[in-house]
Amino acid sequence: MIQKLNWNAIPTEQVNPMMVRQMVYGKEIMIVKMSFKDGFEVPWHQHPNEQISQIFKGICRFWLANQSESIDLKAGEILVIPANVAHKALMIGAVEAVDTFSPPRQDWLDGTDNYLKR
Image 1 (cartoon, rainbow, N blue to C red):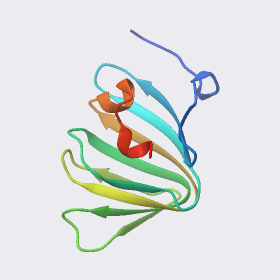
Image 2: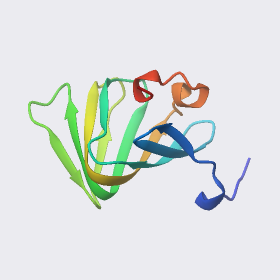
Image 3: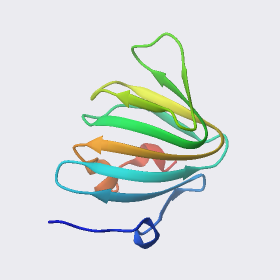
């Protein structure tokens, strides 16, 4: 199905006191616009979805299980995370980001993403 959407019309979900997100998805791909408060930490997790993270404001510090050092993503930078690679992240400053997943994150769609809701 072809859809024309506007971010202003996409429902906003308050995931926790430090994170809000909007999700758009099709059968094979999902794009998620997110805002984080300074200091929010995404705990270690992994998923079968390939992930592309884009930062538009602030700094997102990533740790990946297969890397010895952290990676700081700043505005305008993109990180590609292969499927099933464990990772965590720390928001430095107010962060605005867009993540793209393939396939869509089922745990985000059905609300079982409890690691983010603490």
